[in-house]
Structures are given as structure tokens and as C-alpha cells.
Length: 607
Image 1 (cartoon, rainbow, N blue to C red):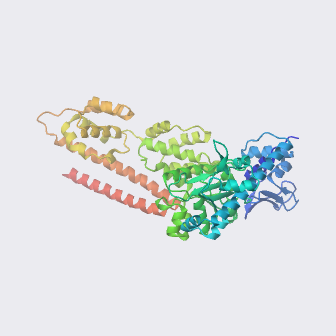
Image 2 (cartoon, rainbow, N blue to C red):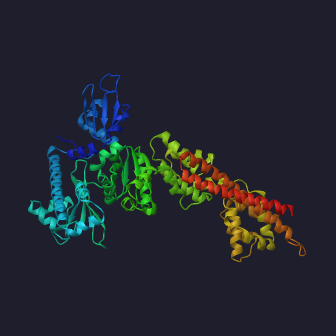
Image 3 (cartoon, rainbow, N blue to C red):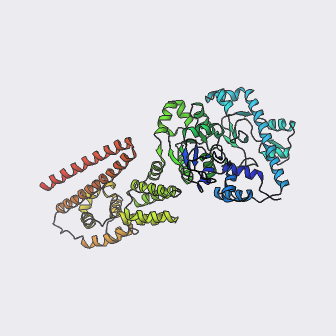
């Protein structure tokens, strides 16, 4: 009789989120480590139906029904076991394999058992080799790894020989084909096989039952590439489905109610040895939804502590999207000077690490900081890029109320106008793709009020008189016109003057051909720019232009002060006290500049 492979059923049972699946049928409430509800299989008023994500089972203390997620679906849906497997696979997002007859399934199970046995023998041999290799033991001592930690993680060492492990396993009855299938050996083009791992410290990847399904090897000699070498995919191991160390740390994660997610083997080992044992490592690869589901069996809160370099921050941003899609509450811990957990704890101690972990950024703070890093929100292009990047992270949130709350907070942080917010929310809610160029155009039209009289008159004076240009253009700074509707025109005038090129309406129009505001402003300015008589002094025109420039500076300062008020209020609501202090200092400095500008303008007017 055809049926699903047992290996697939076992794997699906491990990957399925029993809490989420049962929640589709029963309103569960968290109580300690488990989730409780009134039993759907008999009448009761006091909840006695319990779901254990750690053990991946359910049980009713009233009627005695219990079992795996498959048994629940069979009872609640009144279906056969194969149909229950289909339903669980669909809810978990796992494609179904072809059904097989009993003989083929037995062959698969036998192969898995045989490969697990080979991996176990290989690990025992590597552990023994580590004890016999002073160089590897010195390396571990240099990294501060104690013997107790080494034994807890079952670290080993692969000697720098081509056939050390192959010869050992063949002496125990392994065939070349089995060793190649296990990933422990590599086939030569000229025939024969050789050890995959040579001259490397071995980190075993253990499943939740503590069985070695794969291995990672780190070179201990300098200048050896690659530094890390991992097992290929095998019948036992599919990349992105396991978390390093979870077999040791899952109980601490469940007890603490949150997990710390790090990148590499040594990051996790350093935390574990320092007493921070509610952690797991994503094996140096981008976090996958399967890994998030696995972690979600033990906690629904996660602190991402990847490296602080550009690659690490980008990996953290992608991990946020994966975790949000799985319903996690996410924070991000970035250690100073791009330090990894191992380096940081050695330098500053575990107490300081825990203090910083407690002050980790919310996922939204991190996403906004990354989206605005190196970007000027007063420029429509930069702001559009920041909006696009931020919304890409938020659209994965499944809970619609949370998604709206995060959206509003993000739009506050990016200072997006209400009219554009409505369009962006509709696009994100419908799943439509946000085109950056379209967002940029909307931002430009939404944020740009009509050009002020001061802007228009200053451009007229600069375009119409060379003496005015010589006196005023050298004094114009980029921040004077930053964010103004006429920024493109004033920027082009300054550039032409600095390059010593002639300034007239046609040249200016060519320089600002793609600027919609310039297309309107430049012809009007040319029409309004009167010519000064040969014997007429330019003093009055220069003074008028300087007055226009002061007006622009005042408007810009007032706008920046208004924006800072909003940022301070948002920082206060989020409890970011350091940011409040920094922004307040900036606010006071700008207010003083504005006061000095107003006093100077009043004095010039009186004179």
C-alpha cells in the first residue's frame, strides 16, 4: 500500500508548529511553558486541554485524548492519517512528496539510520582525535573554550590527512558509496574518495534528539581557505532546517521566554560558556522560515545579535522579515565597533553584554535606522528609498493590527505626509509592489509647497545681475536651499558660478531640464529680471538679495526645528533617552541660530 515516506512524516512532525495549527481550531492561551484551552473533544468549563510546543504534543487532562499534531487533525477533522499529513503539510507550507510503497519507505528509513550511524562513528573518532592533537587543544584554549564546553558541544578535530576518517570508517564496515552519500567523503575525479574535512576543528550539527546530522569545520591554520567548510545536503541534512546548539539551549529559551539569535558556532559557544544559554546560531547562513518555525516552538520573542558590519546588518534585516512573518516579537542588538559576541564578552564581560541586550533596539527602530543610514530625508530620492526599504520589512507582519501600528510608527519616523500615507497603506495592504520612482514623485509633490516670494525674487535677482551674483552666490550654502521647492535651481546657479560658466536663462534651463519646479520658475524669473542702468549702483539689489537669502535661512531653520520637535516626541514615547538628549541639544543649537539670525536681520533693517 502506498504511503508517505516515514522520513518525511518524521521531518514534518518536527517542523510543524503545533501551537499555530491547533490555534486554527481552538482559542489557546499561554500558561507557563504550555498553552491551554477548553477541550474541543468534550464539554468542559475549566480548561484542561494543554499544548506543549517544547514536546510537540497535546493532551487533555479531562478526556485523556492526546498525541502529535497529526493525531489532533485526525480527531478534529475526522480524517485518515494520510489526509492529516496532507493538512499539516499544507498548513506548514511544506510540499508533499510522492507516496511510496512500504518497501521503498523501508529502504529510505534504513538509509537514514545507516547514515546517522556513520555520522555518530565519525564524531566519536573526531572527538578522540581532538584529545590527541595538542595544536587543536591549544587553539581552543586560545579562544577561551573550556573542556566542559568542548564536551557539551562535542567538538572534535579532523587530522590533516586525506584518508584518516575514510580508513577508520571503512574498517568499521562502511562502503565508499555510503561515505560519499553521507557527505563525510568526496569522490575523486580519478576514482576513489577522500576525507571532506582535513585539518579542521569540527562542530557537529545535532538535531533536537542530539543526533549528528551534519558538520561544520573551521581551519585552525592561518591563510587556509575556506575558513569554514560545511557538510553538503544529504538524506539526513537539508540546509536551513536546523539551528546550531538548540539541542542544548531549548530549555533555557523556553524558560526565559526569548531566544538570542547569533550567526556562527563560536558566537553561540561563547554565550553558552558565559552563562547566556538561551541562544541559538543560524549556522552562518541567512535565516530561513523553517529555522524560525523551529525556534518558535520554544519562544516567540527573539533578539538578533549578528555582526555589526554591513553584511551582518543586512542579514539582520532579512531575519527580521522572516521572524515577523512567523509572529515573533523581534529586537536587534548591535555591539559597538562591529564586535561579535565572543569578542565583546572577552573584552567587557557578560554583565555588560546582558545590559546591552536589555537595551536592544526594537525591530522597527533598527529598520528605520538602517533605512535612513547615509540618507537625507529632505531629498525625495533618499526618502523614497527609505520608505521602500522600510515597508518591505513591515509587509511580512501577519497580524493586521500590528502591521498598521508598525506602519504608523514608521511613517512618523520617516516624516511622511498624511495624504501619501493613505496611498502607501493601500498599496502595502493590497500586496502591490511599491515602485521607488513613483514614491519619489509622490513625495516631491506632497512635501513641496509653492515656491515662496523670497525664493522667486532671489532667483530673479541672481539671474538678472552679475554684480548681485558675485556678491551673493559665494555666500549661499547647500543647507540654505535644502528641502526647498527651488533647491534644484539654486543648486544649478551655484554650480555654474563656481565653474566660471555664463549664467543666463537658457543655460539654467538646460541644467535643470528634469526639474518640474524649475520648468515653471526659470522662465518667470527671466521675464521678471530687469536690467540695471549703467550708472545705477547695485547696492540696493544686493541688499534685497541678501534679505531674501536670510528669509530662506530662517524658513529652513524653522522647518528643521519643527521636524526635531516631532523626533524628540517620538523618542520620548519610545523611551530612547539618549536620543532625546542628543536631539534636544540639536534643537537648542538650531533655536539659538534662528534667534541670532532674526536679531541680525532686525539690525540690518534698522540700519
